[in-house]
Image 1 (spheres, helix red, strand yellow):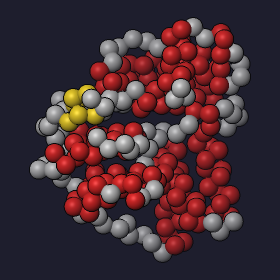
Image 2 (cartoon, one colour; image 1 turned 180 degrees about the vertical axis):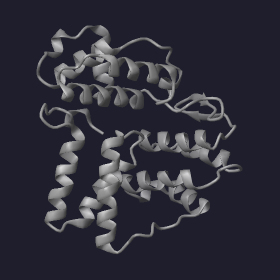
Image 3 (spheres, helix red, strand yellow; image 1 turned 30 degrees about the vertical axis):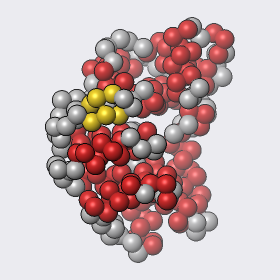
Image 4 (cartoon, one colour; image 1 turned 120 degrees about the vertical axis):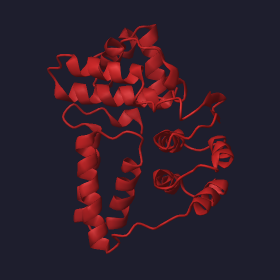
Length: 240
């Protein structure tokens, strides 16, 4: 997810995506619309409101295509796909990573640890890691040279740092709803880009920094007005 897509004051990122999907559906470009929906739903975080809309559109398209049944992949098939990751498109790998929720991975820890070492999209690693935390897999995996045990650690969205900052944002008196939506997107992108380090962040309120960065994205402020800490976060979420 690129932050540069989050610029509009009148429409947030997901509203623009949904508008694009509806346009493709009207043009009978069902496969392209379906690929966009699956890509967005495979992301580690999607706001609940838009997740429901995307799932509804997914059901509609699958009904049109007569493909209600989702293809089944065994654990060995999933592992084989990742072993040969360079033969597949990233969108397909993102979709396959969502299957980790549907299988029990006890006994596959060493193989999954090898998957974490692959040069694949960080979102894929987060989706797999989140599935392992749900299953309480007790194993010390290495992700980007950091040891992480899903049994002992939470997901990046369930840490004290993440939860308290989201509560702080919700309690902030936003006069512009679009600014609030953008702040949430910026914060979650920051958590994702800083994974796995974001699992271990100690709580500090960074709402002012997030709001100032959002105002830059909306053209209300200039980058030169950001302080050193804000510039660091801005560069992280823009992958600079």
